[in-house]
Image (cartoon, one colour):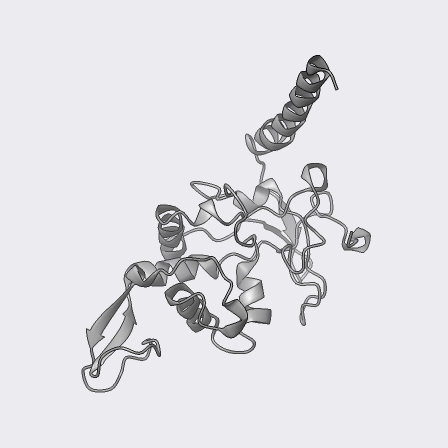
Amino acid sequence: MSFRTFILSLSTSFGVAWLAIIVIPYYKMRSLEPVLVEDGDGTNAVYIPKRAGRIADGAEVYAANGCYQCHSQVVRPTYAGNDMFRPDWGGIAGDEERGDTRRETNAFDFEGEKFAHIGVARLGSDLSNLARRVEAIYAKGDDPEKWLYTHLYNPRLKPERRESTCPSFRFLFKVTAVKGNPSADSLPFPVEEGMEVTLTSDARALVSYLLSLKKDQPVPSSLNFSPPSLATP
C-alpha cells in the first residue's frame, strides 16, 4: 500500500467515524420534539425519563468520580456498530412482565439530562440498563440497593467478580460507632468491634442514579430497534 493510499484510507475512516459519532447525533439531538407513547389504557402520554431530585444529584456524583471513563451509556445503533448481541445491554431478553425489552439507545433517552454520560471507553460494561440487570440478574431476588452498595464498597467481594477492574469507592461510605442496634442500612463488612459501615449522602445519591438507568422504556416504533432481527455474530 502506497503512502498516498494509506492517508486516503485513514482520512476516509476518520470521516466516517466523525459523521457517525458527532454529526448525526448532533442533528438528531439539537431540536427534540416531545414524543407521545400509548399508555396501557389507550391514551397518549409524553415520554420523558425521570431526571430530578436525588437521581440528578447522583448523576453529579457519577461524573465527579469519573465513572464515564470506564463505562458507556449507549447501546449503539446499527449504523455505528451493533451492540444488540451483547446479553441484556439493551434491555432484558426475557423480562417476566414485558417480554423482550431490548432496544438501541436513541436521542430521547437523554432528554432532561444536563449532561449525557455516553462514556469515554468501555473498560467496564455499558450501564444503559444497569438497574434492569441488577434487579433481574445480579441481585437475584435480593435488595438491588444493597447489592450496589456492596459492589461499590468492594467490587471483588463475590468469587465470580474477582477479576473485576472496578475500583473500590469506600470513600463514599463511613465507619461510625454503633449506637444501640446496628443501623438498618449498615453494610456487613468487618470493622473493629462496636463500629459499622454506613452510607454517606453521596453513596445514596449515586445508587439512586444507578437504579434509574433503565433505558428500555417503550418508544414509538420509528425509534425502536426490531428485536426479531437480533443476531449473535
